[in-house]
Amino acid sequence: MKIERHFGLRIDDELLRKFRYVCEYDGRSANGKILHMIRKCVLEYEKEFGEIVLEQEQG
Image (cartoon, rainbow, N blue to C red; front, side, top):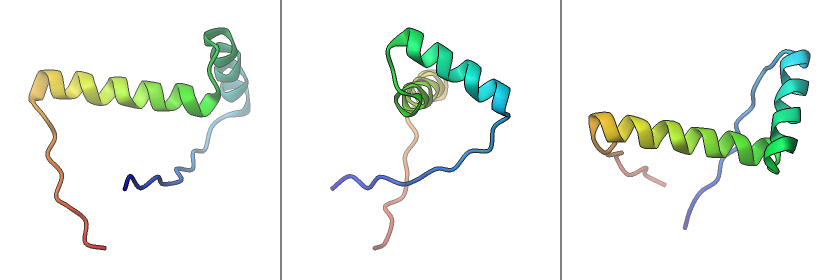
């Protein structure tokens, strides 16, 4: 089962408004755009440095 977590972010009002403008242009929600950017960042990192292997969480 995939666990989803909440991630809070502090951001300047003007930057957030501009970001939402870009999101609307791309046809994505702000959350969807952020997830897309995070996935791209991780993929680029793994392409350069290899797969990130995480330890399993106890739970």
